[in-house]
Length: 533
Image 1 (tube, rainbow, N blue to C red):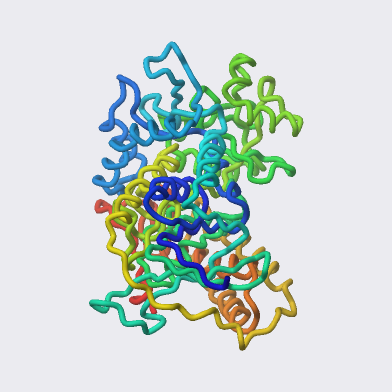
Image 2: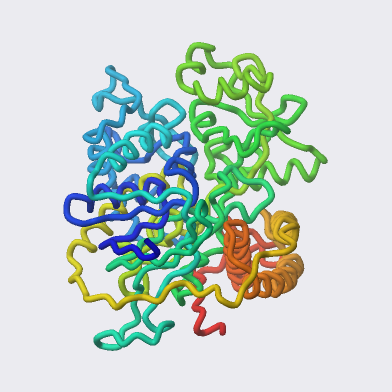
């Protein structure tokens, strides 16, 4: 079939997409489109856990307050309160699905709760040090077994289909999303997916940077597609760099969880001296933006390739039981964390901005939703509090499902097939690989942890040149997965740089040497394609 119809089309198979699918599946025919296998996204890589006020010494109010502090004045308080208050029920739902969180029979909750940077109490429920993987395994099994859910692996979205672009007359003349064009990578053809509702759940855009903790799938697909469909984009300048990515030539993208510092890990210079107390009173438990900038400062000041995270003072049995994945991976690389420090560097980790939505995941384009890291819900503000990301996926996956079920179905027009009558096969695909590498390198050098206007303008000029080449390539050759990802990365990079140039202050994750102070009024950076074009 060259055309498919589903009531809800979900683009992306991370925790947000899986949650939404399971919440809807008893009521609708659902489709999940994922560009690799169903388990290949960033959600499965999450180590630390999920934040929720579960213990007697905690509360949603405390959770909200910690989130607001980390967000540096830019969190939406209503959205933050909604997420914090919804967190315990989201955890109960996961437990009902069969997720096996780490137990602690001595604790009233029955579960072990850990503490991470920026949290005032222990509230992180986890499954060892591989929480994302544990959650994904359970939900994937349920998704694959459900008769109302169809999964299309090795399919990558090309673009959204909107009524105005096709000159289709919609009642009340409202713009709406009608589905998407999807490239079937195995059959090498573009297929039309028609849907009553379409959901962007493709994750973040951190492969735009040379060094990242994210998998190769994190190419900003949903954000770029939303932008090209005239969705409002918010706060893309706030890219969270995780302070502690394992520094080793054979350890691509391996994260050393925030929980290591939460359980007493200390950051040290090569001579064994601690440095975090010089930068913040909270030391290793300061929010991620502060820790990442401190590491970046010390590395540049001293000409270091990395710093060191030391938790060897803790009992070996404790470390092996609490961090089995990290322990095993480090040991494979010749690092015994029970005896020695772990070399670490900051790396791009999380996209705090994205497609602007309300608390139901609705975008400004009718019948288009965005959830998970693709979306900007107002929860994270200028910096994401540790372990609020998986929680956001769960809460907004649930709320979007409720809103979708309340939508009235519409009679949908027959959508035209993808037209490739005027294109040919590419003759020099090395151009794509070269442009991909160039983009990631100059984004790392010019749009990293510490920024200047001069470097941002340099990046912007290079993005303009790359876009010209990519648009010419896109117009003349048949689309490939690599070309689509590069196109999306360039759009995501452009949004990050545009947003960073517009912010004339330093706040949260955005630190500018030209504007080192924080303005008294906190405002979002909002990009609207109609205004720019």
